[in-house]
Each structure stands twice: as structure tokens, then as C-alpha cells.
Image (cartoon, rainbow, N blue to C red; front, side, top):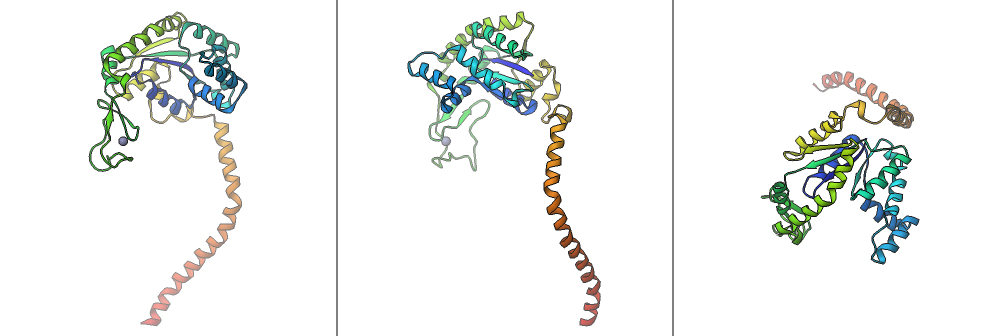
Length: 281
Ligand SMILES: [Zn+2]
């Protein structure tokens, strides 16, 4: 399952991606993470990316695409992937399409998580961060706990909630406008290719997951645990079981003898108990 999720800030895209990762057992490939890791590991692409960033330039799309290509060659991406943070514009969408077609792994679906504009503003402006421990809360959806054990781990006092300057209503409105303007061409691009699914992302997390799973044609993903048929291929599981069995076979045999002896011992002890009691009486 090869997917791109599109969703404005506050649409719950992160939460839904995380669920897909767990239930479909496919990796989420974030271009931000790829960049950081390539730079940290000093790969050739990472070195070039760092050079651009140090010079205050944007990292070239071709570098990011190179990193995506390398990442998709990893074993865990064979069953699919969720792309995060890419593409962000039409040129990147075209380039990604060429790349994926070149490696024979074209996208299966692009899902747009749609949330009413007013609701998005409400959600984002409810965000609060603790100035002491950095934990993120949402006054609407995940308010700071009250009562025992609710204290800030840093100060042992209640969390000191602050609103990030860019989470106020005016800034949020502007961020959403920019997001919408940038994303619309992508939406049109994928709609024209018959890949786009628009789902209503309002309501509970479970409800949204159900709609997402339906859109992906994999309703089983709405369940907490995927049924056996969608869990990793059987051969692999068998191999693990066999290996585990082989590992324990010897020690198990060695244990069985003292076990048996103990059992026999217990039996005889039990058998002699009445006698012993009789003697005492
Ligand atoms: Zn705190």
C-alpha cells in the first residue's frame, strides 16, 4: 500500500499516519527525517544537502528524491509506505511520479483529510505547551490531566501552559490559507490521475480511521489488530517460530529430567506423608 496523506495542520494527519504504520505495518517516510539522518550519517546526499543548508539555500528536490529512492530500497518498504512531507508542490509531484514509476512502485492512493476551516482554527488555537517540561496539550481534545499524578515532572507544580506565538487565531488562519493555496494544485493533480480520495476528518479518531481504511479499500485497518491474513507473510513467522523452537529444544530437554525427578520425588513424598503423620500420632 503506497500512500500519500494530505491534510492541513490540525487535520489529525499525524495520528492517522501513526495508526496506518502500526496496522498496515508499513513505514512512514518523512523527508524531514531522511534529511536529518542523511546529514547526521554524512552520506553523499547528506553532505550535499548540508552544503545547501549551510549556504542558506533550499535543498534541491533532486537530493530529496535521491534520499526517497534510497529509503524505498529498504526491506521494510517492500509492502508499501506512507510519504510524509513530500510532495509539497506540483513540480515535486511530477518528479515523484517519475521516480516511483521508474522503480515500479507507483502510488496506490492519495488521501486528503478534510476538516472544516473553522474547526481547524478551533483545534489549533486550543494547543498549549508546558513552558517547563515541553509537553503538548490541547484544551479541546487532550487537556492537561487533573488530580493525582497530574503535576509537571519538571517542577512538581501544575504544568505552566503557554500558547505558541504561531498558534494564535490570526496566524493559524494565515497558515491554513498558505497551506490551501499550495496544496490545491496537488489535489487537482492526483484527482486527474484517479488516485485522490477525500475523506471527512471530523469526528473521533476511530471514526476517521474507519473512513480512511474504507477509502484505502482495506476496511480491516479500522480494527485495532489486523487479522492474520494481513499480518506479515506466513513464511517469516514460521521461520521465527522454528528458530525459537530450536533454541529452546536443548535446555528444555535438560530441564525435563530434574522436572521429572522432582515430580516423582513429590509423589513419593506425598505417598509417605500419611505414614509420617501416622507415626507422629
Ligand atoms: Zn510541564
